[in-house]
Amino acid sequence: MSTIHRAAAQADHAAQIAGRLMRAIGALLLCGAAHAAPIRLVALTEDLPPLNYVEAGVVKGYSTELLQAMAEEAKFDLSISVLPWPRAYRMALAQPDTLLYSLVRTEEREPLFSWIGPISARKIYLFRLKRRLDVRVRTLADAHRYRIGAVYEMAATQGLLKRGFGFRKELDGAQNDDHNVKKLFAGRVDLILALDWSAYHYAKENGHKAEDIVPVLLVDASHAYYIGLSKNSDPEIAARLDAALERLRAAGLPEKLKRKYLGQ
Image 1 (tube, rainbow, N blue to C red):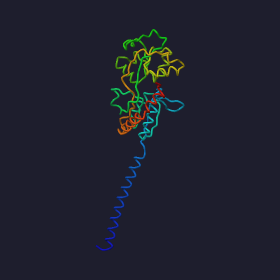
Image 2: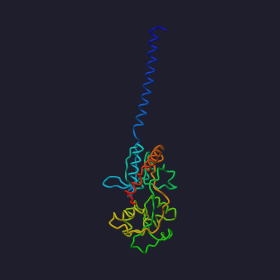
Image 3: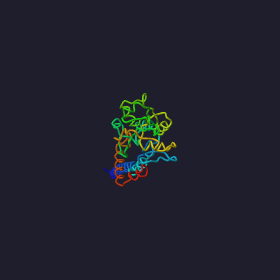
Image 4: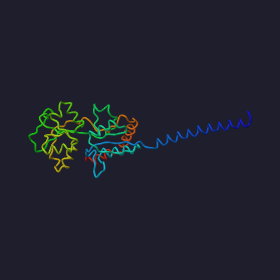
């Protein structure tokens, strides 16, 4: 091989090596950029104080602050929107990288979400007005005699439907607990199905005293609140958030937030 041909071959080989090196560096840079850019999550919730609610345009509450801390710990970007529960629920089923909270984990919902938590306990009662001594409920069967305000898509409402109650019979549907409390004080319903602290909160928000409503029957204390991740999301998201929650539990944050929002 002539000196010219040998030099050309060496130059071509060097160019090939340089090309492979540049492609490798480019791939590494792209990989690094992908890892450096945090995944952006959308969280959807309803107005359900003191777990999740809006105050002066800011989303607050026990579950909200806990989720924000979890996202920060797990290195996720997070945006939160407060919507009517039925709309938030439908969106969370359809959109990837979407979280729904505070969500009750039930058998029916089990395959629909990836579950993170639990984040809080939950107690659901039937309430009446203190002055309505004519409303007497000792068992759930007694409640069939009355008109009951119930939130659409609420897990406890679904439980009543399974036990023979119906929206065309005893149940009067509403978008949230606030609407139900208003209906209770207006005499449009005899009972409401609600979380204990939520019912008391909205009684006071509507100009009444918490003691003006009375829990007459504990309907459900068997489930807890979780955060649900849309199924068409990367499972690693749920794993990282769960790990973040465990670290925050070890640091005592959930108990601190409970004292702040739920009292003792």
